[in-house]
Image (tube, rainbow, N blue to C red; front, side):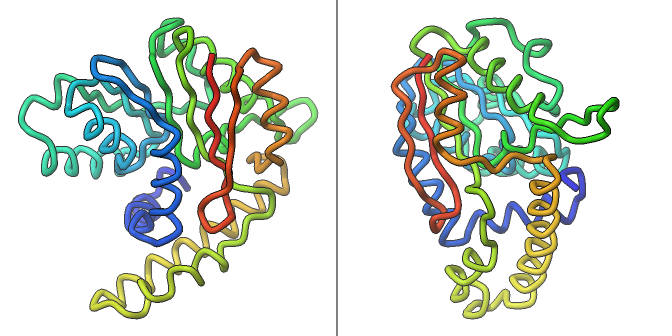
Length: 247
């Protein structure tokens, strides 16, 4: 469903919701980019974290932004063209990629000063053909690859849904934006698509395809890989963790 055009568009509109703006603000508070650095945005969507990195470095930053969805990348490109001055294409590169297959074949070790990922790494998926079930292999390998492609002292900032996250709670926090708007028909359509999507996500998580893990388990995994100074907090109306860890 990540490749579905309607779903991609719905996600871009969801970024105007109150819970998502809270999540974006929390994530930004964990990011400390410096001018001249090189950053990677995994699952960039329509590019809100790219905007944040660019703004805070006043355009003096190199960014590679990846996403599985061509539609999401197209909307990100349109957003950058409207917001950034000419020449941004020389510093921001958009790549269609599936991180479920890892990062080792895409990037060299110690390539990035920082990596950000908004509500996406939990969707690294791997099907075991022998046991005929989904497992955590791609997710854990992605965390290892992030560590590999980060420079020493580089930071990894990412968000991940809590176990059993509640989309109805998110919708309840956004009811004013859904109902009290002249775009009411569009808001209802977007909410319906996101509700359908959330049901699929929760079922897939129960099946082991996706990985909504307790914060303590994520911290333990990060430490076992070698990450240090790990901090996290709740955001997204209490439905997502935001982490920051250093290599």
